[in-house]
Length: 312
Image 1 (tube, rainbow, N blue to C red):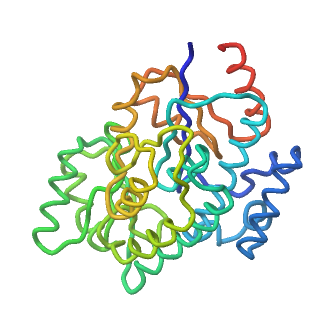
Image 2 (image 1 turned 60 degrees about the horizontal axis):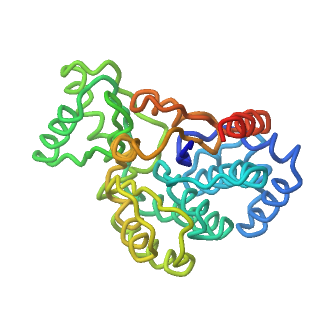
Image 3 (image 1 turned 180 degrees about the vertical axis):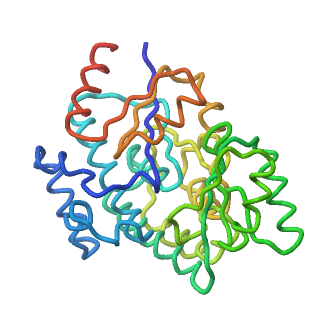
């Protein structure tokens, strides 16, 4: 029997035009676009399909990515009854994962992550926040450099453990720049500041934890159809009380993506990623030998459906 995990990407997967083929070919996807626009009072078609600078702003990036992931998931699930062993996401994607297992309504989730993005941006107002990707160093080397920087007043922390040799750090932009040479001296193959105006998954977001948790309380359901793997613990949870605690902590804790895959890899034979691009498929190549299929547009939807049907 083939056992499947559902995956959902986070920020960094966005691009102008994402979701367009779903909307053009599916009345359901078009209705989802309209419903999200009405709920947020934002023209989501313009945000997704026309060149603009809003798509890179966290408060707009997050609902846009979640909406496209939910389009992909809903169109897939309407065609085939495939229950996951577990669902998980990368950062923002954990909210998509929760929606996929019925822990919250997808439209409530769109509104919630719009708020989440707004809270994150407000928490970083008044200082230059940023994030930096480091390629080619061991986790402990990056951790040690960040620790030494904090010992002398720097504000930098590991934020995303994506794969072996790929880690993202977050903090004050100037403090990130100040450790760039140390990272290179430690033989990092690449060090690059990301186009981010917030510092995700670090203590700088502490002001956002309480209001996000309060908003979560209103939309989370008690029942999950399958467990969700937490970014914070790399372990599965399936209750509202756990979700409230973990999703608040997620804002200020690093994303343990590669650890989540490794901890749960023995439970499944394959992964299906729902959302634009194939970011998580790329990360999975470095962490698991199990295949990852991506539903990112209308053509790939039917390609994955065909593969899943053959393997049942």
